[in-house]
Length: 295
View 1 (tube, rainbow, N blue to C red):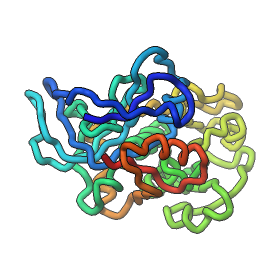
View 2: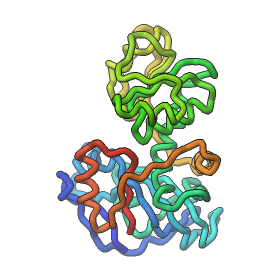
View 3: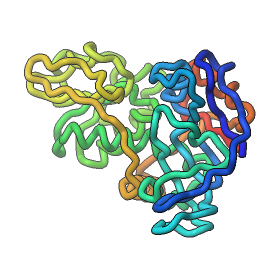
């Protein structure tokens, strides 16, 4: 089995394609034959060594879509099921950027029926991050939310999910993204924040203290880098999401794709053996949608 890994930290050239033994699913696990695996910014951080693991082989990739091809005992899935899953973990010997992926049965959900596997592969990490961050904010219908990075992958899902909950969403992004952000359900659009103007901020653009200033006194700030949120000021509750695999929640999100609530965006696809090129492209910036590796 081929898999994309890093064994030394560095730039895109550090990504290696290695041959690995075909993994076998244990109890309450499934093996998925990969049809699509999205590349995310966290993969660049892992590759660069931001999360440690020096001296180890570290597998890349969190998102996978494909077909169940083997199951362990006590699995809720059957061979042939079309699924999506989150393969979480910053330092793991094999990730989702591989021809086959073994994950826990509770991390798996039925794939959306209305999109192909390449598009489905863009759902797990980013949509789960968005919905779990919104849960932390605990907003009621009618309250105001600013989503920074609203045209990005996590931000776009957050806008759609929050608007569906009846929250009044303002999307912050570049001028050229206004039409798109409004199409996601944002009631308002801005390229700059305003001090104390919102009940909450979901800071997917990782602006930190600058975004915190846009929350009203006693409001809430949520970041998307675990533990890296700014300290509380003016009674603002600050927190950050540490995304967790949740097959039941992922199934709800997949259903929202089929209902037309969530929009899946693929910018480009790359063969698995061009993983380093995909890393280089993501590092350049300006990508709208996800880059997806196709074994």
